Each structure stands twice: as C-alpha cells, then as structure tokens.
Length: 255
Image 1 (tube, one colour):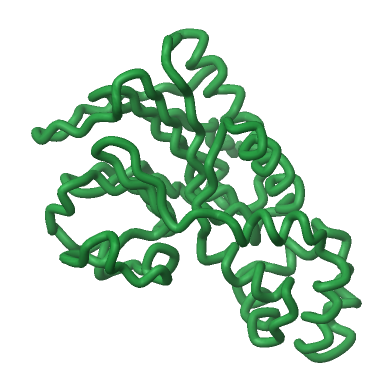
Image 2 (cartoon, helix red, strand yellow):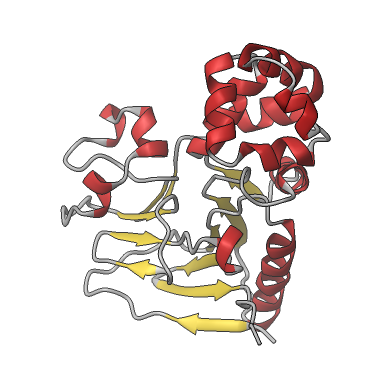
C-alpha cells in the first residue's frame, strides 16, 4: 500500500514550469531494495495522479557506501539517466569514491572511513584484498576492479540542477553567495552554515546529506535525507506546478 503524505506549501509560492513534474530522491546509500520499492511507489503515484507533461527523477547523490548494494544502485540510476528519465547530482560519497577509483591513495583511505567497504564488497572486492596492502595498493586495485563506466558516470554527475523556483543540490549552498560564485565543494559538503541559516535564497533549495527522522520543510529549504541505509525509509519529494508532496518506503516494524 502506498505511503503518501501531502505537505502544506509555505506562504511564499514556489513553482515548477508548466508541464513538468519532478520526483527528487534522497540519499540511497546502497539500498537497492528501497530504491526499487520507492520507484514502484512513484509509478503508482503517476497512475493515481497522471500528468500530461514531462516527468523527471532527480537523484540528490550519495548512491554509494554504507548499504550493501551500491553497485546495483549505480547500475540502475545509470540506466535511468541514460534513458533520459533522470539526472544525478554528485554527493560527497561519490566524490571520494571516484577519487579512490581513479587511484588516489588518500581518497581510498577516506572511502573506508565513510562506509566504502560495503561499496567495494558490492563490486566483488573481498575484505582480505582490502587488508592486504597499503592504501596506495588499494587505490591501484580499485583502478583495476571498479568498472570505468561506473566511475565515469559518477564523475559526470551534476553539481546542481535548477527548474523553476527550485534548486536541487546534494548538501546545500553557501548563504548570501550567488549560484555562479559558489565553491563546488559546498554543494557536496556544506552542513551547518546552510542548515542553520534563515537566509532567503530567492529559490527553494531541495537537498539531502543531513539526516533527519522526517522530511524537513523550512521556509528556505527542504531536506529529504531520512537515513535510508539505517532507518529503512527512503524519501522522494514530488513537485508539480505549485504543489509538493512526499512519497516514502515503509519503515520496518520490530516485534
């Protein structure tokens, strides 16, 4: 049964261009099971609320790490992007993974510190191979073992995507800095300076990166990272004209 919640719009009106619907999808972190479930819910939503316009999926990054099936998530998202059905925003986890898979020893070390061991396992890299040598050895191994098509795909991901009054990024933006003057690293890494700001960005920022128990709607931002890899709740924000609504996977129940 579809989990469906409507959210009240803020006093200020934010809109997409006429004839477009977007589903923005939060941080997946290797949970291919949740991604497939959420895509099914999006399909059901399209049947229940058909649109005559275009439909676009916007993935907000952090496809990889922590969860068990990063390789499968990358493959599915790459298929959707290639088909013209989706765009991908680069997250901080993609940034580190790409650097490691291009042979950077420092990035290989960082990757293991942020849950990258699960990603490597999904690509068939065994723990004993990870432990065998130095981080430089590991980086060299990843050059050989991680498919170049996946690395290139993740490396080509966007810093941001804008449509109408909405800006989609992974982490956020630096307040009071124009979009053209932003440091690209802030799109993937910024946290408190953005999250704690009440600044009117002149557009609604839709982002992931910072986990919350529920989708957070603030006057200047909407955060949709609900910690899928540990909570079992993967969230999508639906947008069309001046409407917005939330679709989510079912949280697991515990006896």
